[in-house]
Image (tube, rainbow, N blue to C red; front, side, top):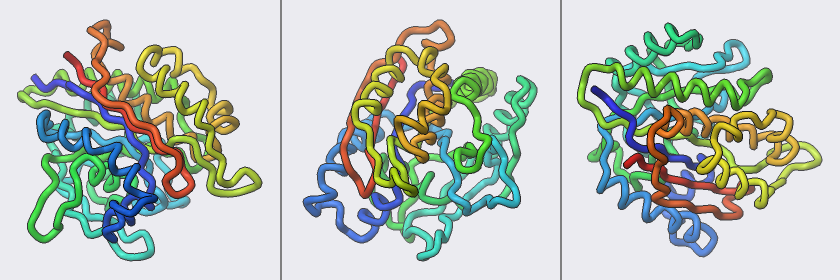
Length: 288
């Protein structure tokens, strides 16, 4: 059967993708950010997944205020990099896994989660920046991402947004869905977005390092308790865009210890302030 063996957590700051695309990754400002992912790229090569379930939020690219699904899963065979106003990122087209994605949709919907099924969409920096951070800079003409990717889109842009508890429960449902898929697949699940940042209003530029570090601590040691944190605390402490961190709870809910298994091993942890106007966090958890 298929199995989830690891979870990855990372910010998906659009400026990180631009820095990599423009060859600025070794400039003094950006070098510390990319250095924090050097281990991650080695780990990916040593622990290659067959499929990645990548949890992210669309930034008014595939969806708009005309239609806002709370949770959506991509079931297509490929996804093109989106044009977010300055042309698509120069990265490879993302190859999907329609069979596993459709199975997850069937299973999770039967577990009473209402997923929107998406058979065609372009994917923005929320998905492509994490792939670049974990896999490195790839030539779209001659290289491919190392494995298929299943996009799982969460609305954290337009209120109402799902609670941390609901996201955590969705991760548990996804783990059960993957385990019931009758094919031997090594699956990783990635939670992306955050950490603390606010892009507008009187608190624009807010970064709360202490709160971010406590979040990382609890994500490892007390995910069930962290899932009970109310949304208002994310907004108050991590800023209006810090609400993206609830997506990390989907990935955490899919790990074995939440289903009474062994605790995962912390393979890597990284935190840096700032990248553009955002705190960058990164964590890799691997089941034994």
